[in-house]
Image (cartoon, rainbow, N blue to C red; front, side):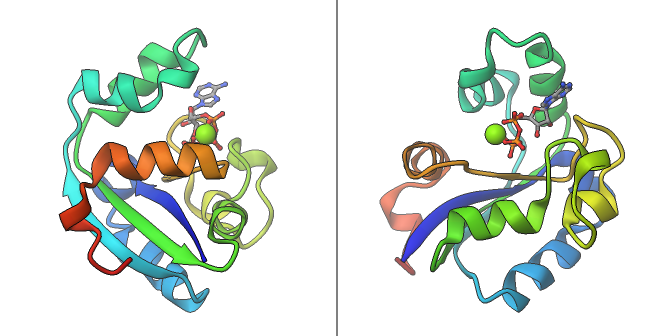
Length: 139
Ligand code: ATP
Ligand code: MG
């Protein structure tokens, strides 16, 4: 069983897509083992996306991620990392496969509704970034 960090980004929360995203998670047999609504500070967003700090979009991305509430979750299941990435679709919604969340709901390469960890190492860092041991009771 694998764990991954999923986020409904501020655009998704503002557009009332939390229910839509959770419905898909449950329908695809992933379990939610931790969840909370947070409003990241700019510096928390910078720490979360630190791997991208040299990228030209880093400042805009961290402004966006700290612009409003986001729903952070730990998902658990078989191949949870790849499965959730497949459900999200490609980063650029114009290239995302039919039926994926980004294909159906993203409006912009940045405002792409959801986040997912991309490897076991990043999943471990990202789940611990937002949740302590007491908040992960379903593990
Ligand atoms: P995420 O990490 O959010 O799950 P991802 O792994 O598909 O997305 P990354 O390459 O890690 O894509 O980029 C992180 C986020 O930065 C993207 O989801 C998107 O919001 C933003 N982003 C990526 N590339 C660009 C770009 N060229 N211009 C603007 N924003 C971008
Ligand atoms: Mg990424």
